[in-house]
Each structure stands twice: as C-alpha cells, then as structure tokens.
Image (cartoon, rainbow, N blue to C red; front, side):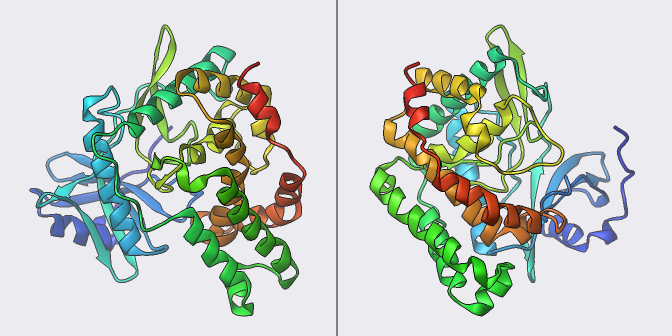
Length: 354
C-alpha cells in the first residue's frame, strides 16, 4: 500500500501545539493521516525534524477526564505487564514529568504513542489450529492481566452507569433526538436497558473480577508472531474502547475474528459469530487455559447487549463515521435486539465440555 505524503503540521494545529507542550527535543515537521475511517477519532503518524516518528490520536467525543484516566490506567497496566511475556505488547504512551501526557484544546484532545513494531498479521480466515491458538493466547493475556501485582483502580466509567445514562436519555424527547432514535423505539430500548441491568446482577456481575479489556479486537489492530504452537500476540496499538470490566467484554470481537467467513469489509454486528463452530473451538481452548464459570459464559449475552446499547445506540455517531452509524443503529433496533431476546446461550456453556 502506498502511503500518502506527510502534510504540513499546520493542517492539524492541535498536534503541533501538543508536541510543543510535551517538551521533547525537535520540532514536529510532518503529519500523515492514517485513520481507518470507521471511527470518528483521527490517527496520525507524526514526524520530528530528526527523523523520529510517533503515532498521535485526536478525539473530541465524551469527556477529557475519561480520556486522561483511561490512558493513565493503560500506562499502569503496561507497567505491570513488564514481568510477563506481554511486557512489550501494548504500545507505550509518551510521558511528561513522570505522568502520561495528554493535551486538551477546547473540545478536542490528543495523545502520542511510540510506534508499535508490526510482525505478522492474522489471515482473514483462521484455520482450526489458529482458532485454537487465538483461544489460548487470549486466555493467557487475560490471565496475565488478572494477576497484576497491584489491581488497577476502578475506572469512573462502568457498564452500569453507561446503561443508566442511556435509559434516562431515552425517556426524554430531546434525549431521543440527540441519540437519533425514533420515539417508536423508546419502549424497546428502555426495556433492553432494564434487561441488561437485571440479568447482569442475576448472573453476578458485581462479583466478577474486573480487569483491563480492549473490547475491539480485529485483525487490523494487533499483530502476532507465528510459532510452532500457532502464534503469540506481538503488538497492539488501538485503545479506543479500553475499559476495566469483566473479561467477557472481549469475547464478541474474538468471535468475529475467528468466524468462518473471516473479516468483512462491510460489517454488521449480528450475534451469529457466537454460534459459529469456530467460536466453540475458541471457547474450549480458552477454557482449557484459563477456566470460565458457567455464569461468565451466560454473561456473554449481556456483554453483547451492552455493546449494542453503548457503542451502537448511545455512542454510535461518535464512534462510527456517518455512513455506518445510522445503519448499525437501525439494524440493532430492527434485528439484533429481537434476535438476542430469542436466543439461549446455554449451548455455549455445554460447548465447554464437548
């Protein structure tokens, strides 16, 4: 792929100002937009006058306080993984005066990362052996993130607070307009919020261990190193959906990685990947490495419901470009939620012992 040339830093003023405020040697002399053009966040390669290059991200959605806290938590997570084989997996965040550096200018903020080295990428369609390797590797990564020397402090964000905020917004006409939701969908969506909160509590959400999770796993945002046993994670550089929550929030996108038809250019968020044969293989490999409780497997239904409620309905316009967000929201209301209500996840529990 031919990359676009670097542009003048004046085209992205916040990055020029942020680099100057960071106080590192050298002047920022070029920026190259490398955004995936799915999210509303923008990602750049930035070049310094001595030839060094870094990755920069700008965002304008949500709260700067959350943005800053997330990066502090990721920094601490990375620091505590240094004693494990994942010590170099997460791309480092640049620091200033001993703290991660984030920069705010009005309603926009920015952060810089070291460039993550790439190794191999997974193929679009995984072989059965690679599916098994994905299950084992995700389990090992989760186990390392569970057994940190000092547990990460809880984030101010939680699935419960996000769903409660959505429930309240849906109850107001101006809230529905801001969400791009028709009045006719109010009852369905508020019921989905209630269902999530009820089922999460019933399944023991408050007792599940909370660990750092990245939620959005796709073959384009992490690289691997192949070996005789399959592969191991090598580098990861996308933190957009970072949270401190139960490990099961990572599983839906794992299911999408291993699904039979592989990665898709035009994507949808159906629950089908959970019930595809490769995910059962993934689940057994994961369970054999870092065992799951039945209630955790059943919570996958609620983790998926939360994904739809928060990332599609509540925040879709901010996480997805305008060509994606309305379609995904419509599909969720018309198809995804009704299908979810009819589906039992007990077959996944039984798959652990198949």
